[in-house]
Image (cartoon, helix red, strand yellow):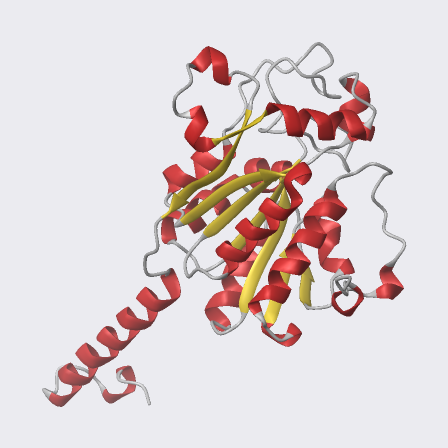
Length: 288
């Protein structure tokens, strides 16, 4: 029986604005299937996005959604989670949105182990805003702001999240749609900060500048150049050059920020009450 995607989308927002051959739809369908696996009611889910091609996702999905400002999706999502901790908060973002303008929000949310799931669409470029290079653009590749090739090394997104303290990190590609869905489902089931890097293609803005305008070529590249994390561990740096290392990089369950914040609040309230009983604090400081 075919999966019913329509119950999770807003038909009035279609047709979508993504270019022919864009891989974003594959990521979104993997996300929908993963949410469906969780058995959550739609009203229990919040999808937050920033600005960029991937961030159009929040308009297409029929959950509680928030389309925010460039680079600030994680900041908005953090506020939602603190105010309404029972909601399942998911951030959909791109490599430019999350790693450059929103880079600080990303690393500090990971450091805090904020209870969010981030789906990071990595198409290696700022596609919507003019083809500028992003922190994920590979060295030597062309962009509108790098007409002779990118001179900066790119972030290893999964390792960045790992180093910042995320409790679950995985990478897959749109060629490996079933694997991607499985990683997203595992991330959704976790407390704390989880990040899924979804490597996807942008044949229009990135591909044309880098002589890869055919989306099928991208998919073949994702298929042929992807290697499992375990295999990569036994390879030299030269052998790993240009490869897409897929798999689960971090799987370290630990208490998320919301639970730690709740415990600290209870501790603070207990201390203040004891001080009030001893008469060392005015009644107004104790609270109700």
